[in-house]
Image (cartoon, rainbow, N blue to C red; front, side, top):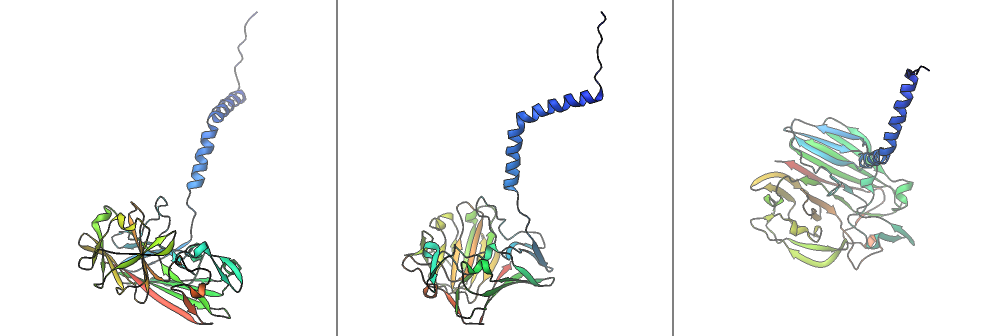
Length: 330
């Protein structure tokens, strides 16, 4: 009997290909799924942002939190920290309606308990753009049912960014729209990129003064203080300075701080009128935060009543609070 060899048709070849592929896929599907999970987990959400520029600088601001995330000169040098979450996933958050931490993260108002997390909620909320030009943009955040769950006051917070030659001016406006007085704090938290050796940098204060700062304990202001070593108004930077977290200045004569790389001035922050200041970084992180504030964390002894909180600001009905600081590129 003659052997007959059947030649596979195109359909059979295609079927065998898919069978082989499925076996291979089954063998590696856990790896594929795992890698897909990593991609999804590590993907960066797309945030809406606005840019402003002039012949010296370009600034970019996220609508979420009205947060400055880039400030470059016309040589494209970046001055704002990139926000790498390995160290700290923020750039320049706005702290409102509190600065720092409340004792037990809570307070009482009109007999009700409220929970308010560290630095408040503004940095996590989406602001509206209410005015825009080539070198300036204004953002607005209004109170809502969501904010009243943790902060039972009606308000509008405006943040205005304006480029003026080699400076970025940042203005805050707080409007009390409640039918009562309103307690609040507000503060800035810009992180400046310091590439290279952190110990090559120093801070120069505008005034020659004793620099006594308060230490944090469990995110609250303790009674312990230390003094910075100052030579010719300069403080040499090193990570050991921040081993107990931020340096908290309840009062300060200086209203200008300049970051120098060796002897070269890099960037200057001017914060006239701000009564309090924080300076902070994390170990081995290539950035430094210079934080002008109206208010700071609770002390270990005080808690519960926002109206009695150290550093708190009080606005009357329909009153407007205004303050401004600037970042100058040198």
